[in-house]
Length: 224
Image (cartoon, helix red, strand yellow):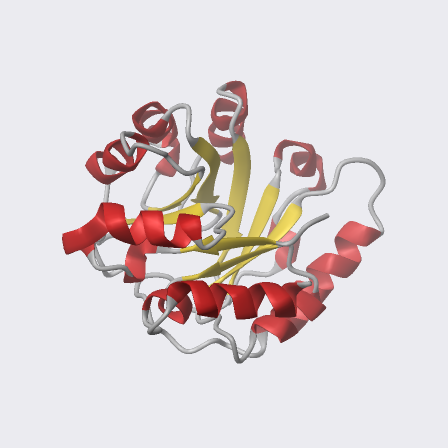
């Protein structure tokens, strides 16, 4: 399977949101990663439904990977899907914040959108019950503490990605994709791919570089 690159708009210039999204799309982004933060589950407030609606109204709307870093995300999954429809590809909820995980995943899946479950650095893979694996399309390994862009990659998370890759490779049938999110740049993207990630999220690793297209081209070459 082709490895997917998902620039996170958390690090873009919001004064020029459409141009910033369009630039990485033209440079070959597979998905646009949208980090939603509520100031409760994480200590920062970022963007919400109006931004998702705005991206969906672009002349050439991208496929969105929406990451809900919010309390009780099961209350908002359908609202975000409606806001970005039909351009929402993945909706991810945080394992630690979701009170009704089965309900949240079922609701996302019912709308024809891929389901994601994100695990914070300190959360072990084993918290995901095996019986729920069939409802999960993407498992997100947070490689920084959620809440802020521009953080330094936690290298210990490479072994967590490898552990998950090994677990999934031993499974029969449908296997979730592995997404790595946080602090990923040209200097470490190769290690993340080698560890077993299928989708790579990078914000400042692209948006804080001088030439997005050159950076993404170099990342693509490393990703293979």
